[in-house]
Image (cartoon, rainbow, N blue to C red; front, side, top):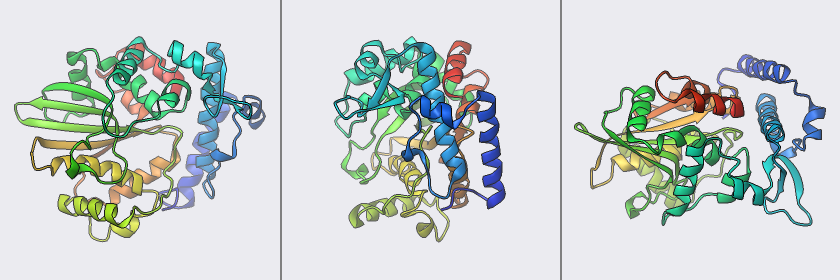
Length: 336
């Protein structure tokens, strides 16, 4: 998979949009270096627009940290004699004690609540949650944390964002793995950044949400044969994919999206038949050209799109009736 949906024109348009954002923010490469934000890891071969986005995103977070007066962090996060200063991180001890990476009291409370109730399945990077300003886990808590303390607020937000979903009482879980049952152990990514479970008169629905920010849709090695066989079986039973989808997904930049989508599809196929409706939702920044292209490529492979949705962070923030203004403003100031 290439990094653009329709050739060089789309790549140029994406780069121009990022250039405009850089100009508006007064970004320069010299400032990025001075802010400890210039790293080879942000360079994506043959994708200059994606590289530019990753550099801008990292610098934005460093600039936010500096404006708040938070101490700079490092790689590795725990520091050490050979640690390197990283502008897009907060010093770990300070970050853990203060909760500075979580931008609302509700987001911080939701994060601490989640950590107090560990799940038996695969964990997530807790140190990055506290100290890495690029952490998708932290972004998820910041986006959805205000919904965790009130069922009514969560119901209103879900109805605003996903009006086609069956309505009912909503429970919200963060960094949730639905792979507690053996039949769901697919051998790939097994955690939703946020899972909205809706119980209504029409049945039970699951919304599995994964959030991207600084990441790009990187090609990954194909799963081992046993895991791949399980994953392909779920995909084929779903009837969601067009003929010939496999070579365009396996081992490409679409594989991770596919595997995360499979988590929802596997829940809908579970023998218990608890879930009557489900959807995988991928949330990403409007300026992230890699995921903007990837979701277009992925959607082309779907014969049925009912279980796959995408939203930009900006669209999510500005959906009328979803988030309160204070949350919207503080998340927007931090990430967009």
